[in-house]
Image (cartoon, rainbow, N blue to C red; front, side, top):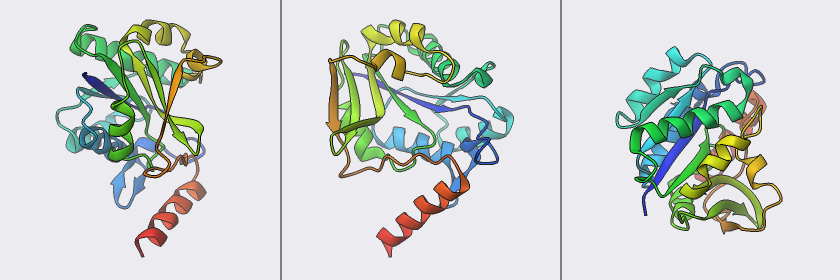
Length: 205
């Protein structure tokens, strides 16, 4: 079973005050952190989608994972749907649809999801399946899309709706509990970043 990793890191981060790809946590840009998590979680191939300030984010992405493919979504401002479509198209061009059994989608602003959670969710992948990470039974990220669903996901992605629109209301999405090895916090604002950083320091202190 070959599961690709797709990191969505194209947004402008308006509430953060700058592109989230370049926001640093523990001295590491979030785009680098996300790519490292995908690599260490065994995802291959790996694609990262950049958009806002792509020229600044690209060096950080390439330094973190020289084997990852960088895709720039020119229409990133249209929302996450545009980024997801660009990433899926980049994967298809890179590997060919027959070479990848599933795609794991990770958002750059979820730094609490590390390699252990990604590997666990990816292990549940099938070509015709849909999988989501779960936290105490509540569905969240990451999401794994079986190859047979990729065309439907791309068609349903629009505005700020990525895979969520395709998954909504379905009863065939398998939850995989990762709350014991990951946190579901989104980092949308400087306050969120401070809280996540503070929580990490408390655990490590």
